[in-house]
Structures are given as C-alpha cells and as structure tokens.
Length: 567
Ligand SMILES: [Zn+2]
Image (cartoon, rainbow, N blue to C red; front, side, top):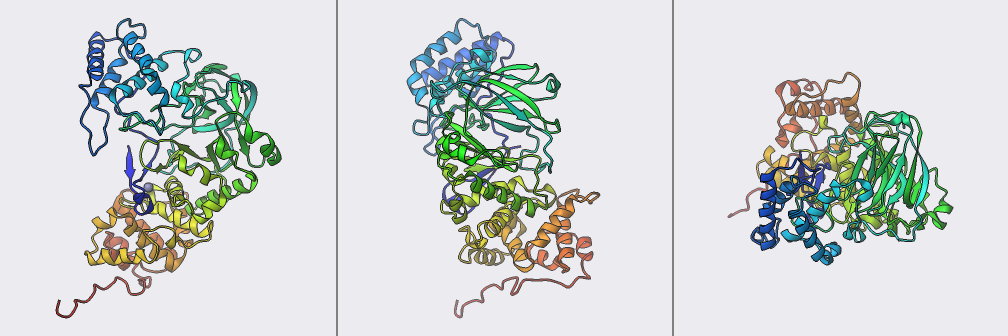
C-alpha cells in the first residue's frame, strides 16, 4: 500500500509533504528480467516505440507539467518480451540512445528528463542492464551527476569486513518503518559505476537469504512526471554461492543484506574491486584518523554510523565533520529519545537509516528503511547546532519521519497517522533541542494551536474534520500532554507491548483502549473530554472509567464567541 501524506505548516508551505514507507509506485515502467518472447508483444513494442519517436504518444501538459504518457509504461512492459538478441527493434533503440547520449548524460536536477522519448531511452537502458551478467553491466553516463563519479585513479581494493547479524536489541515493527525490509550491513566500500565487484562469504551463510546490495538510493521514480536521475539506481544480488559477482550501472555503497530473522554471530566477507568510502563508526573509528584520512577517501558517498542510526551522506558533507564523536553521540541521544517515548529500550537490533537523494519517490521526505530526504538536508545532518536551532526549518520533518518509524498501529487509529508521529517531533524538540515544541512549527506557534481548536469547535466539532486535519487532532494530544506530561504517554504506549496485553481488534477498539488506558494511567476520567472533541468511543469503555474523577482542560470546550450587538 502506498500512502502519501501532507504535513501542514512548514512543509506544506514548501509545497511538499511526506510519504510513508518505501513502497513505491512503479508506473509507468517496471523493468523486470526479460519475460518470455512473445511475437505479439514484440510487434506492440515496435509500434509503441514508433509512436514515441513520432511524438504522437505525448499527452498535453497538466498544470504546466508534462507527465509521462501511458505509452512509455506500455512500451517498457512490452520491451520485456523482446528478446535480448533481437535484431530489429533493439538495435534501432540502441542507435537512438547513441544519438541522445548528450541529453542522457546531463540528466540531473538542473537538466531533468520529462519527454517520453528520453524516458523510453532511459527505461530501455535499464532493461538492457538487467539482462546482462554483472561483469558486462556498463556504466550509466548519468551516474556522474548522481550518485556521483569515482575518480579513475582511485585504488580498487580488497577488504575483509566483519558482519554481525546477532546484535541485541528490540526489533522495529512499526507500521511505517518498513519492518519487512532486510537489514543492511555497511562495508565502507563503494562500487564504481559499471565496475564488477566480487563478494566472498563463508559456506555457512549460503542459502540463508543474504544478498549483496549496491546503492542506498532505493526509491524508484518511474511514476513521476520528471526525472532528476535514472529512476532506478540500486540493486541486489542473492548470495547463492561463496563467490558473488555484482555491479551497478550507477555505482553505489556496498552492503550485505541479512534477512529479518537472521541471528548469525560474526562472519567475515571479502570484497574485491571496490573503492574505499568515508565511514565513521562510533566507538570503533579513531576520530584523529577520520580527520586526517578517512573523510577524504575517494568514494562519492560514505556513512556516519552508530549502533542506533546510520546516516548516508555525500562525501562533500562528510568532509565537514570535524568532531564525529560529538556529532554521533548527539544522534544516538536523539534515537534514545525516540525509543523513550515509544516505550522501548535504547538498544536496537536494527539501526535506523537516513538517506538523502536528489529526488525521492513522493513527498519532501518519507519514513521507512531507509528514511529518505532531499539533498537540502545533507549539511543539516552533520551540524548539531543546525538541528538544535532548527535554523534550516526542515528539522520538524526529520523528527516527523522518524516519528512515523516509531508509530504503533495499536495506538494509531484512523485519522491519527499524521498526528501521533508529531508527538515524537514535539518530544524531540523538548528533550533534545531544549525548546518549546509549541513554537517549533508554524501550525502551532504563537498560539496558533489554540486558534485551530477554537475554529474546530466553532465549526461544530465534527470527527470527520478532526481526522482530516492533522494539526487539529494534535491539539487533543497537546492538551493531554500539557496537563499530565509525557510520562503517561510512555506508560500507555508500553502497556500495548506488555506480554499478554489485550490488543485492539478494530479501529473502535483502538479509540476505546487509548482513552481507557490513558485515563487509568492518569487516574482521571477522560470520557467527557473525548466526547467533547467528538472522538467516538463506546458506552462500555466510558463506563469502565466512570468512577475516576472527570478531567477537562480549563475553559474547555471553548465557548462560541457571543454574537455582537446589532449583528
Ligand atoms: Zn507524515
């Protein structure tokens, strides 16, 4: 399921939103390994190609922005049935690629691709790449723009890397955290575009679901109207033998992926043919070596890593990191605050990942594994003061997406997907940045949250409105937090995870349980408060807390303004 959400306030002002989870629409073209040859499809691919070349497939612009017509998707699907050794259509398109190579090479944020013809050509290149063994994968010309070039003279090395999949800690099962994703183990190595690497593993890990991954940029852009990079630039190879050869036409950081349930103690992989990338691991890397040598290693991307989070960044941003210990301790503290509010211990089995990209599949940022952002955040990630001061303005968004990664379906009933994650943003601003969370977002600041509440009640306190306006829903939680602090939130969130806890069976149950559990934890009856807001709960649930003293915020619900004399 794909969900797109819009964050009101600052992100909305930027014309952006957020998108949860890494599942991505693959329209118009899902290049897949070649399907069986089908003469009808070959003929169809040919006609679609002719149409694209003639420009007859281009649909008029919508809202000033041209979207790829369905013909590109149809063409790329039909292309899957055109055999690799086809001597009619494929040579024609290869020639077209040659003719357009200057435009394809320039593909970037500054020179995006929007035409059907160029999209078809890029899709064709991806189709061709999928068909060849790793040793024959060429470098994609646009790789130099993104994710970046590897200097020709950079030494190709052979390195042994320790992989440990049995790290203790809690598993993230949050609905919007991509809980099903394999875990990525960083290697500090980078495969240059179109250059094969070999990965050697011990016999003992064969057939256990491990994979080699090249590239951290997992978002695909097939469904977007404009492309600022090749729409698919990361790839995985299953590890089926002790030696795996892998390559990526766009290049990328090299990872070993382990399946979710894997708990194998440390083993060693030997990787040959990649270049070294800047990688700092808190508690392992010598910061003096980092400053002197590691941050200058030749790969275009590298990583800052702790046991709790990993930030993938362009080397230009990594070079700015003078004190990686201080920076990454700060990030660890941040992750601990998220764990605190979620009612989880600090030790995590999976380190959460952040990856900036020149273009992502939807929204301004989105949650998941990895959590994706735009390149504008790169220098924010490495600057503690920018985060604390929120000078960039996008820090709420960073916290918001990490909040999505910590949301639990049991206490996130319909209409609160874009609400309860903001509790984490508020918590982080208060505990980490030492600032008033009610001043951290324009939709709340300067008393705006109270005005939002007053308007909601003036409009008749309709639950349908509550569920469709994230910052209206958030006011309900703000009132509870203002009255009782954060402790009952943590205590209540923990209860859902306790062994034998009765978990809600449906959405009504979720609302009931949230009200009842929170009421019991604060020793007050919040039934009338929920009713005043128009949040539906059952009589049975309300009865179960009726012996507690009723709680209502002061002067709540707000009285409608009295009519002006003479009006
Ligand atoms: Zn969101």
